[in-house]
Amino acid sequence: MEMKSVLVLGGGFAGLEAAIFLRKKGFKVTMISNRDYFYIYPTSIWIPTGEAEFEDICVPLKELSDVHGFELIVDEVKEIYSKERRVVCANGEYGCEYLVIAIGSGKMKHEGSEHFLSICGEPKEAIKIKERIDELIKKGGGKIAMGFGGNPKDPSNVRGGPAFEVLFNVHNHLKKLGIRDKFELTFFAPMEKPGARLGEQALKMMDIFFKRLDIKRHFGKKIKRFESDGIIFEDDSKLESDFTMFIPAGNGHPVFKNSDLPLNEAGLIKINDYCEVIHDYDESPEFYNVFAIGDSVALDGPDWRAKQGHVAEVMARNVAFNIDAISKGSEERKGYMSHINILCVMDSGDGAAFVYRNDKGGKMIPMPVVGHWIKKAWGWYCRNSKLEKIPRIPGL
Image 1 (cartoon, rainbow, N blue to C red):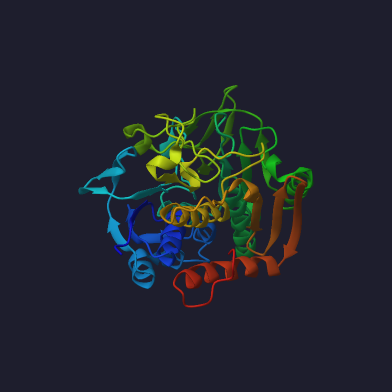
Image 2 (image 1 turned 60 degrees about the horizontal axis):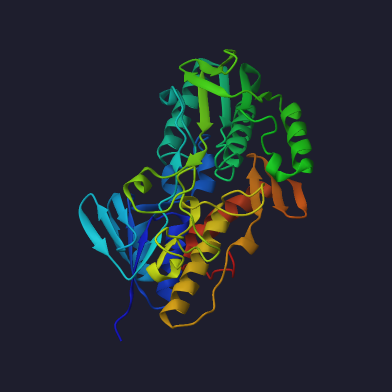
């Protein structure tokens, strides 16, 4: 019997996990990625301080395709015709029997965006962040501002954790160099309580961290624009900065505008619990065999929900199961909504905090020293388990 074909768009956490598990189910899988490497974003926080090299964070997709047996095409997706399961790329067109969309999200636009760098942007921006920080170290000091933004149309598409982590790591790096007192560090965000989705306990602990580390805070004012020497807010006040690191909130990927995909107000793909795209053509999304996962989707769930890599991977594994069930004529399905939670190890360079949030509330547990090495170990595990050099822990 000829293997049924699945086209996976994207080589990030969601796309790679889908490709791996679809291959385990025996499907012929083709992945299209605009990069030739899988980038481990959660561990990129150590590039700016020199604790990790760029190559340490990258896993060649060719190696992963050889290990798992999927076909890799490095190309840029330009248009998606989901009704026909047809994708137009810069260098060709592709069709399939099942389509899985996992190309991530776009970014909110900000005036003066050329004046900041983002740890969650294009991977090589992390190298530029390091260069800018090193320049200030050579100068003997300066003002550094780091923060993140929100999207009122889709609050789940926010990446606040890495902003906290990079700032805490920079603090620790400067402290080790004995020049922390030569720098003014400020954390900024337009919302009144950045990190509120983590729960009240986490908010209180973050306040303690900021005071203990002498990190200034600038919260509750909308950002008007970025300038070369700072950030201008809605009341025309200015936060001076010699270097700004900012993580814009996510919105719909620009490619989605060149598609027939059903989108929410923020431009993200509408899906059901089984990650099937809810087409506007009729009431039978399963008829089209089109799925979307990870940052590409409009995530349902509680107000505090947030998009994270482990949720994207749950979605990917569920999609592999659901596609297999559909191909076999089975009615069994797996949904993602029961898996919505926030789970992370927030690193500071000299320790970390374990953060967890579900419907019952949130917890933030300090892990001095050992927490840093736990996150380091996870990065090693992520790389080597995906390359099948070590056994994979179920669910991780």
